[in-house]
Image (cartoon, rainbow, N blue to C red; front, side, top):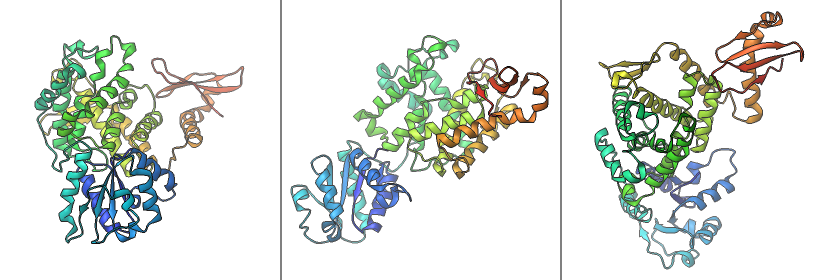
Amino acid sequence: MGYDVFISHSKDNEIADAIYDYLLKSGIQCFLDIRSLKPGELFPSRINEARESCSVVVLLLSSESDNSIAVNSELNDLYKKKKIIPLRIQDFEPKNLMIFIGAIQWLDAYTSPFDQHLPALLEAVGHYLDVKPHTEQKLIAPEDIVSYLKKYVKELTLNYPSFIPQEERLTIGEHALRTLRLFEKYRSYNKFTFPDNLISRDKFTIVLALHDVGMAIVSSRSEIHLKYDETQKKIKWLISQTNFKNEYYFNAQEERISLALVSNEPIWRYLNNRFDEITCAEQILNMALRAGIEPDSESLSYFYRLVMIYYMCDAGSYSKTVGGDRDYDFIKFDTNNKEIKFAGTAIKKVIDLESVVEKIVKGSIPFTKAYWKPIKQQYLSSWVNQNIDKLKMGKVLEGKYYKYRLNSELKRYEVQPLSGTKLPALKDPN
């Protein structure tokens, strides 16, 4: 995981907590040992990773930190590599740390109340991150967002036609506009809460607007997979630009979430019977892991909701209901309540998928390769066990995604994907 700020302290937990919360709410990803480490983790390696990835070190300067072997060791490793902001939280003159911070301008924050010094710290951190962090999120109309992004049109290709939107004579920007308009309707009904530790609403809106920019390099259906890497490259480029960062600053976590969201489209494949709910949940989990989200955490539930909102707005934008050319039997629009719902057979499929995700969050399906593969095989072969007598009679039976038959020569049951799917054949261990 990457961080913007590393908070170095010794026993000043209450003040460190206040700094962590304040910077995080301002969109800055911080590492603080007492908040970022989890029970059972190997903390030396995590701390080292955080120190290496950060851009700024906030040093809580107190008599305790001045005498701390750990803090002195950290500063010895970092003072020539990172920007150090010494925050003096006690009225004293340091001795041991002077060798590292003697030539650096300090920020005094030892007068009460401590909270009054937080804006000055935020300004200092923002200066070194080359951004202007802001605590208030902006809600901007979809048309204004697309117009703003067209400032970068040469690189982001929002005016370019792409392979799929071209069927409707849409540019990538016009498709983005439709998608954003649906997001406005979706969020006004559901009032989804965007957790501070994942991604803010306005940053998610930007990602949604840019989700198909990679389609500009796609010339045929066989090349659609190329759009994922291209989209990630363009988004990563954009959020690194200084002018853009001053308008929409993506912290390290928001960048990871953004790139993970556009790296795959598992919901689309699942609802189009490309694979089962176990495989779909596995792919969503792989996306979450790329974003630094732990499997058995509530953050995975929120990430799943982001993936689902992304899919609903993207897929729904092609519907005839909003001017597209497609009839969907699995998406229902309620124009009065401004709600988008799943309909028909998709309802049960989504319930099945959410059940698997919930089990992962609760830890009842641990995500390890040694455990996950047998669970998946057991899940896929359970249908065989329920129909064992018919299979012994030589019948070929079809399930939701797989067909099953008895290979009399090898004396074993075989599980194969139905035609039109891209599932690998799995051998039934029974």
